[in-house]
Image (cartoon, rainbow, N blue to C red; front, side, top):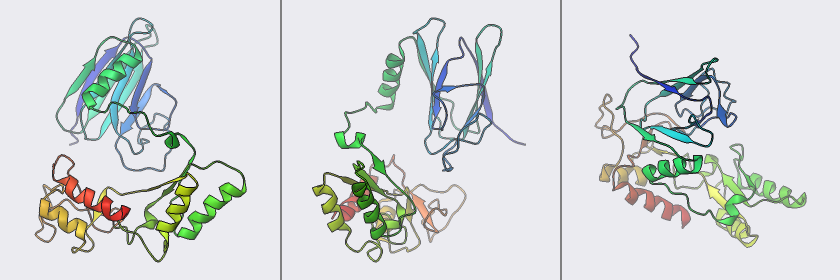
Length: 281
């Protein structure tokens, strides 16, 4: 038998925003809005379910009875979640059905204020007050998983220049890595990457290498896996017990065997900073 937890709310309007991340208009209409970060290729979310993308932000901004007065709901839960919205056609209200497959039910209510006020209160809880971004980050950026060599990336940068088009930042997707190991570079495919980066910087352009969430355990002597095990920073499995993998939760991502960092462990900064320093160096 399927088990889940459901909470229903009646709200005074049909102006509902948030519960992302998804490709959709700003306002949420009637429908089924799932939230589970399973990396779909950015489909348009038509409200029929199973269309969320990478981000999980279980926060909603809802207009109250009076114009300009809003409130917020934040569901602090990392399990798979669904929001079902049904409109009352006669009085302009909505019924929200919040469904999750597990976890603790922890709900934050942000009452009365402008959208800016409510979002500010939400950010106070999240501890993530936005900072003024660097100017270059507001410019045009280009990325592609299909670039598998340095030459291909260089050709893209040159094509922007040849066509007199602005380019502020180029992203390197995971093919730049050596066998999908974080903090490494495939020096056969990207033989002179430091020199290429210097050239970009001289042109006042930036480069951002993607770093994957999964730490490779294909090679148990991988220094980042070894360091993480020594500090015991990887998420453990409640079902899969293996001395070989130190009872870590393992799965296939880009490496055939990957483990994942427990970001609530203070020691995780040791391995992560070591890797970033190695990559930067």
